[in-house]
Length: 447
Image (cartoon, rainbow, N blue to C red):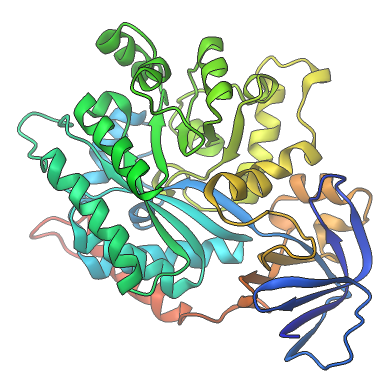
């Protein structure tokens, strides 16, 4: 046995939402092999006294943009359009080393707050292979599981903007996919990330679809984040963005769509029938005033839903427990009747088992034979004192939750609150230095 957490409480997140007490969780070769009182006669390589710990599946962040980890606290009180203009010109000019540090900075924050897998809708304009390799190396060195959806667009954001050809952009994604083997990024996979349907020609969207089919890659895009986005789709296509994607045969179980704030009932039906997934980003949508996504309606129509933080420039953090709480509570002020409110138990799969299935991250459950991807939280802190209901206090617990251990594929990435895979203090120091400089202009005084 490689690793045993002994005498813990376990939220299995299985079909019955079972809670196990005084339980041992045993791990061997990256898989959960024991669940209950241990029968192993051999001393494990590592034994953790977990009598004060709550073990649950690690969280999954299904939408973020890692370069924005340098841009927390910027561009307040602006909506998406002017926000993009203030945030992204500096980030699009990042060098590979800076991109690598941005990925590790986000990884550190996510691990400390319980997230062990991530979908990074990675932007650099113009996109280049060195940038993609750098972010892949960052996640590789963190030990997290990651899908890097390389952002593509061929409709300029502003007049005079030069973008690579469709052939060149698709070629970058294909080469990055091949490079993952060379770079030994076994937990990192490349995906195609069209920025949004209205920012891509049909040629680019079809080319992305065809490459995804050829290599078995995921597709990830923004959809109807703002009323302006939804109106632009109607103007361009005479139909919704979702209907446009359906006409191009892009609606499949391998497609995920971030935001979906302004989808309609026809869109719900198309998405549910296709098995595509909407990724709700409640904190970012509030930060930019984009609206409240119809989470309850999506779920009631049978649409697959996951949650994301979005980038740190429109969230100011990467805390998925915060996103989970916001997603549940927002529906209660959005006109949804109390009898239809999403419960804590119903919400937890949005950051565990649903995205685990959608993005191939495992099962999002604590069961024998499942990948050993889990976190351990201090259960004697404020959030669980007194202990009344594990699921509700977990979802609504907020900053009182303290993550002490994070395990991915059987390896301890967070060991008693200490990151084991990289030097966190050095990463923080370098990130501070980069952050002071990337938004300065020639002649500015940098303190």
